[in-house]
Length: 265
Image (cartoon, rainbow, N blue to C red):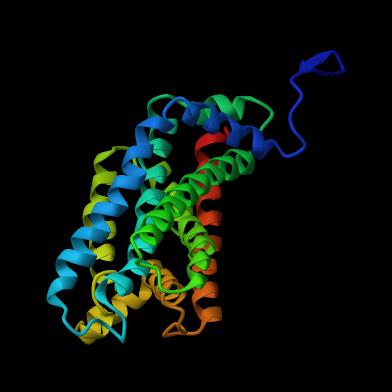
């Protein structure tokens, strides 16, 4: 405990955001077993269903690789996106509307930035563990063609933060969880279907192709696929990283603004 001018205050870590991150880890320690089975079963079923099942009808493969090897990079990026969005919608909404966790945290000697960064760190943790499990499963199934596949982990981390930050702002701003379902219906599902995860975006009409290029998922898919196949990406690595970084920066600033408006009286 710290005491100053007659007021007793609890001691915080040197980096207060770590205390927020630890809070979510404590809760996750009680629930992680429920997700372990799906973390390994889901990628196995996905790879077998799309890579082997659908791939059986793609005789010549894609770009000199089998359909299974070609699709893995997209599935890794898609997994990172879906976990990040899932951890950034209802959990954030409930922390404001239902269980009021953010309100309690703001009553402690924590800044808005500490609350936001600590929760984003937990989202990053969830994404990295899920993608690592996906890598292990796909590697065991022989779907990874290059040792550069490990680079999908930092790409997945950047994608996770790039989509989680603006989603935090969205979930904090809406007044009904129906808006969260609409986000999945009109943004996440179309993005997953048309951002190059399951087929090359070059096969799309010109307008849809450029819409795909505008999504953060396509940039991560291109990087992850290149790493998984051991080839150069279609676009420049620096361009992809800068684009995802711009999403992270803009989303982080917007999330901080919305959180501050909701928590600071």
